[in-house]
Each structure stands twice: as C-alpha cells, then as structure tokens.
Image 1 (cartoon, rainbow, N blue to C red):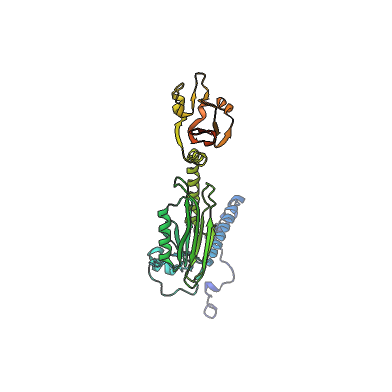
Image 2 (cartoon, one colour):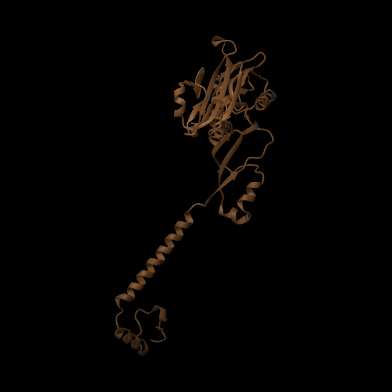
Amino acid sequence: MKALFPREPAQFRFVNQFGPRFLKNRIQMMNRATRSRRSWLVYVVLFAVTGLVTAVAAVEKQQKAPLTWIKKKPEASSKPVAVHSVMIRQRHLVADLEAVQKPVEELVAKPVVSLPDSAQILEEVPTVKIEKQSRYVAQKGKLVYWVITPKMSFADLTELKQTIEKLTSFTFDYNRITFDPFQVYIDAIAVKVHKEKGSAGSVYEGDESDQPIKSIGGYLAESGSLGMGLSSFGMPESLQQLVKEDEKAALGLVAENWMAYLIHKNQKTGAGSSSTVKGSWLRENPGRRNENLGVFINASGQVQLYHTERVTVLINGKEMNASEVPRLDPKQLHTVIVKDVSDESAGPGRKKRYVQIFLNQ
C-alpha cells in the first residue's frame, strides 16, 4: 500500500498538523491578554496621517508652475520720442529654471529675439517726454508751450521771443509792455503771434491799475495751429508751477512796497518846491521846528501844522480838514511830503501849500 499510494507533499495537505510545538504556541496565544482600545487608536491615527500626506503630495504635483513678472525698460534715445512702458507676463517651466541658474534680471538685459506663445502684453501706457527749452518755454511732443508771468523782466521777455522763434516758424512780437513805476512787475502787455501765410493770434492783459497782470500763455504747433489766452491747466506741470510761484512773488513784492506805491500814486506833482521827511525822524526829534517840513510834534506829543492858512492837508491821498491833524497818532507817521506851488489867484508871488501825510496801515 505504501508503494502504491505514496505520501502526498506537505503543500497539498488539507488539514493542519498539530504537533507538540505548534500546539504549545496555540495555547499561549489563547491565554494571552486582549489588546486595549488605546492600542487600536494608535493604528487608526497612523492610517489617517498616511492618507493625508498622500493626498497633499498628489495636489502639489498637479499645481501649475509659478509665474514670473518681467519689466522691460525702454531704451534711451537722443531724440524726443514717445516712451512706452511695457509689462510682459511670462511663464517659466521648472525644467527651464533648473537648467538656467542666472537671475531673471540678467536674462532680461539680453536682447529678446522672439517671445513665447504664452507671453501676454498686459499694459501699455504711452508717456510724452517734456523738454524745458528755457525758463518760460517747454516742448511737449510737437507742441511748444509758453507763458508770460507778472514777474518777468525785459530780459526774460526777450529770451522768450528768441526761443520761440528758434523752435518754431512763428513770429513772436510784443505790441505793448508796461512795467510798474519801480520795475517790479508787468502792469500791462500785448502779444501778437503770426506765421507767414498761416495762422495768427493776439492776447492783451492788464489795465494799468497798479496791479500785476494775470499770467498769459499758449501753445504753437508745427502744423500751424496755435492757442493763446490766460494760462490754463493744459500747460505742462513745470510751467504751471512757475506761474504759481511768480504770481505769488509779485503779490509779495506789492505788499512789501505798498507804501512806496501809495506815495507814488497819490503825491502831488507839478512845478514848485517840495520837501520830504520821514515819520521816524519827527518822532526822534520832538519839538524841532522847520517850516519847510510842514508839521512837527509838539511838547504834548501831538502832530501840529506850522500854518493853517492856504494849506491843503491830504492823508493817504485823501483831502482832510486841518483840524484832523492833531488827532493823528505820531506812531503811525510814515512820510510827510510838503509841496509848494504858485497861486496867482491869491496874489503875485503867493503860494499854496499841500501837506501830504502818509500813515502806516
């Protein structure tokens, strides 16, 4: 029987062989204590962490490569041309960044022959270059702008004319220029601009009212068009700022020399003798009498006239009664001008006196 039915191999057996060694291990396993719930919780946490790490890695792998912004600066040009600021958005692959170790700035400095298909022009902002030709002339593109402010001198006006006629084919003329008595500001001006067989224009500002003019200006184009009038916000910013500064300076000079303008405007003129004395001298020398000075400060500290007959008193240019003089405050005296003119109606050799008193405000 053993020869006819040999023993089958162990891997084809259908039952387990419980020998002494295996039976002993089985009994030990049955007698071992049951695992606690805490030990099972460790396995649950490990499985959760493993799943989370796997999910994050998969998401990061699917993300796109980062974008790099490149700003290309315009090339410098000697001619006044329009400057364009172009921003290019370009995507770089990770493989390209690993292959090229140079920074992005060095790559931009090199000439670019062609752009990749993914490049997109996001923004293009044209700016016009402004060239300052002189203090009162600026060129913006094909337009030449000019301004005339109240503080300009005759030399400034001459330079303005020469600069405009050099830059354009227009003729720039002044039909009238009037300055204030002290040559501080322009009181009135008339300008005419014309082009041979072309357009022409003129502007006038000022009424000789002892006040500075308002700034005027305009533009001239190569095509022959022009614009003139009061300076407006269409001017380049540099000229607008200049207008503000000069107008403010002119008003400051007028305020600073207000008394000089008042005296010049209101004092009597004509044939005859005159004398001038400062109020400070009268205050420093009370009681000093000099008939030619017209007034003096008496012992009581009041302003007093030498004579009241045939005397006309003017205070800040306005005729006043002689009785008002003692009521004046000596501290306000600025200047006293005495003007004697002949008065033939009163008799041969007779004179009439004007006492002009100017007070500080």
